[in-house]
Length: 143
Image (cartoon, rainbow, N blue to C red; front, top):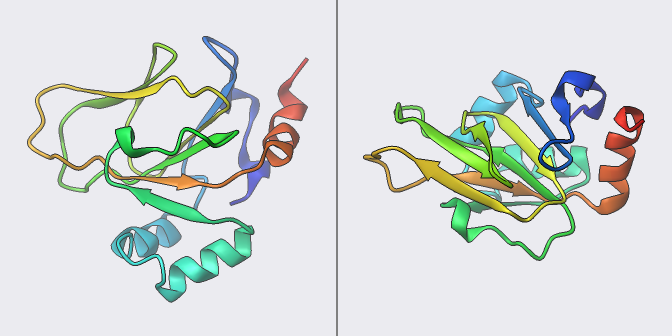
């Protein structure tokens, strides 16, 4: 992940400090990882984690997130055939649940809000980011 791609328009302070960015990971890389989302031991995932010095966990549903993390870094893996409108609420702010979208925040007040859904999965990768990395990412945008 190239954190330098994050621009001021991706950084928000309302209702809480967060970053929201689509395509932080190149689409070709995302597609390969998406196809192997159920096998985190696949070479493409091992390479991704090593390259980015991180670990990831697939969560089938937003409610399965590990809220003990200092930083919530969510990478949405919405099903390609899922055309239903879905939103993640971060402290009440509505954020579209789109494929290859990142939501990064220290806030734990995260839930999925959906209209009628024919899919029971709403997969998300929870990416491990430590507090120091998060602070380095947001530092250029804080005034």
